[in-house]
Length: 538
Image 1 (cartoon, helix red, strand yellow):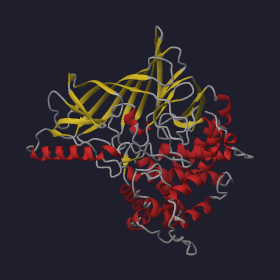
Image 2 (cartoon, rainbow, N blue to C red):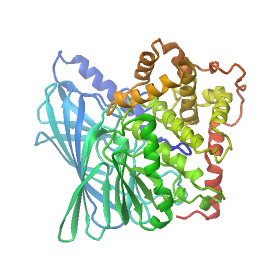
Image 3 (spheres, rainbow, N blue to C red):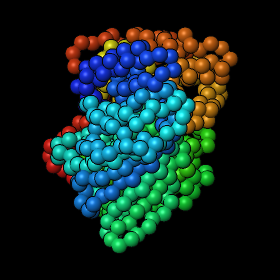
Image 4 (spheres, rainbow, N blue to C red):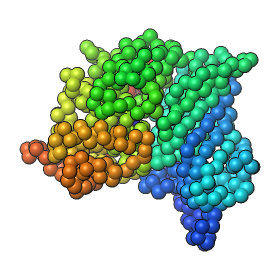
């Protein structure tokens, strides 16, 4: 997610007591079962911040998602069928999917009807016969969901929401299951195929990955896509509407294509045409791009974040016209290019190499912020809000780091995901970049660059933990870095900065939480002012 704005969700919190009760009952049942006997899969994977997200007992391998949009209306009900190929990791008497959508119509497992129930946002499935451990099985769920029209004053619409001419999706961190039944955790990535059945009057239907073609019959057209690299459910992107597809050839062997709402195509072109140069810069710095293509989805809707949907990053169109925010910049690209690089960097750090648990989110945001800041520095720019260069931003973050740790928790241990700025907080962004800076100070720039490349390539397509990063850093540095990195990632107070004995940390202040400062630094003062005045386009 972009460094200039962020979001989380509270919707799973009300289900936690019920989910924990269900988990306890299932645990008792599992303990009572003889060894090797079929037992229920767990209704969560043990994520500290989202206890009810994800499910145990199986490994999802592939999802086929078929959606039927009945009309060209942006906000509408949508019928869907999701088919999941999975492998049982235990003998299963029943198992769960996450689903927060409208209705579930039918479920089959192995082609046979299965019974199902819904407990909060858990879809509990009991197959007609138990599933043996290690056996592959196919689950098919027919469901109905809907795209929705966000409230005018909602700056953070997530899930499956409408734009000026259609709809897009934004599943991070726990909203993938608003869209379809899924094992909604980045710990269980899978490959995907998409079939989007829309009225032939709809100009474009697009999804993650490679376009396979479209087939029309009567007044309906089916658009097909394939994402052959494992993807976390929170990174799904399905966009339907009056969008132009702009092909930009290839850079560093990567096919580039943007998807732009036609109402904004001309206005956005100067900004979007910069992606090839950004791709070249990232490949030069961190190595081979991990996916089959890349592009930006520019949506004509008022929201204040950008999101790293795999192969197709979601942006609000207004971000590419900062004059709409009242920002009079001699070089507007200083405003939007660093954010574009931030989302592009996530393709390596956060998408291809995904966090296993949401407490590891600094691995995403710290790395993306690092390359955002480095790109800005190499361009000779400063941050448009603070006026600081790279080194000044690092030093300023160091100065307030004790405060950030007190308010949000250390970079590697966010306190909670209850508030909008709790999970995607300033300390996983700026503090995460600060950890990388401290590491570079100790192991040197050549080793640090080697670590960054090796991290992205060695763990390509995998879900990882902070411990994995510590182990690899120790290998690259040829010494044990666990104590050093654990202090920087988990200590309640900030360690001394290597190489800078003159740097000091400000005392912790009482008063408004750091979220208030984050909103100020990230630009909410502009977005709120312009929203209230009605000057921002809707």
